[in-house]
Image 1 (cartoon, rainbow, N blue to C red):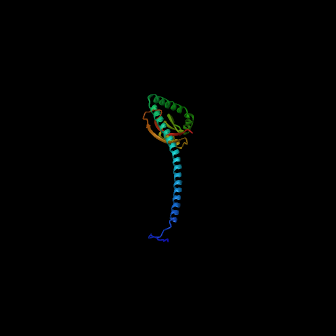
Image 2: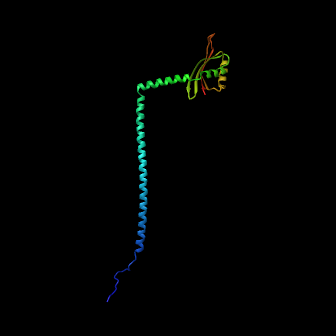
Image 3: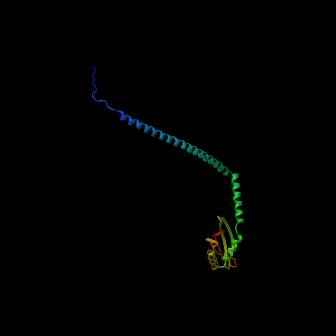
Length: 188
């Protein structure tokens, strides 16, 4: 005779749905881990190329800075300074040669009233314009004022500044009134 006795206090439970759900979640988690791992690895590879490019450019920048420092040290030597000074002097001579003297004299001829003459003229070229220092002699204050007014109305001269205005007390002097001024002259 067979007796069936259930000695447990609780009946046997079916755990298959829990095992199936946890297995499905484990598979989804493993797939997510693999996808994220692949994304992290490809990002690391891309960043590795960028880091290599950055280190290459930094090495180039460092080499260029060293080269610049050596060139600056070279140009601070006495021999190089003499050559640079000589070159600046020669460039200033070339600049003075290229100044349009005939054009400025033609423009001054149109602005000079009777009784006024140019005693001294000294140009300095800067960016297509020239800063002209003029010394002008006049017979009277009226002719000096006429000259300054005509110079201000001129299209070739601008930003006129009177530096010095002298009156001579000597009888028979060539210029009783002498004016020193600076003005920008457009060479273009």
